[in-house]
Length: 215
Image (tube, rainbow, N blue to C red):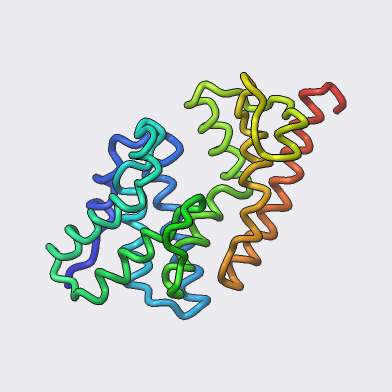
């Protein structure tokens, strides 16, 4: 049973965009280790899942179904990688569950194990705080969207945009990022999320005020 090396993991993300690149994976890996140690999770499973969780189809360039199903493709790839490293089937299945269950918008498979909850929390923490603000603006730019646009009343009430309304990073903050802290599973993840969420609220309050010329 061979471990995944950092050099090997880096190779899976050579074509990734700046939002889903190896730096994102490395941050998730580090936070996942921290949460796993705090919560008593299996570090071997958590580490492998963190290295592999976005390994296939996660970048915005993977449009439509490819992006939406990246957690499935990455879990399948994880099975191939770990089988070649002689991992036992139960551990492979555990890693695959972590990866399939890590996507915020997916309702297909909820994190059932402690290891899956650790990976979910670690991945979601990377859309909060200073890193979260930077990644969300970068994602908007890659998609040709502005950092800030005034949301319509319809969007504020329903989360659905008016025809022609942009999906700025502020829209994404309102639609997703502001809700992330309430989706965390582990006590240590929740504590980190509260602090990062508070920063994000201040950041978008400031951004909104600057755009409006109020500060």
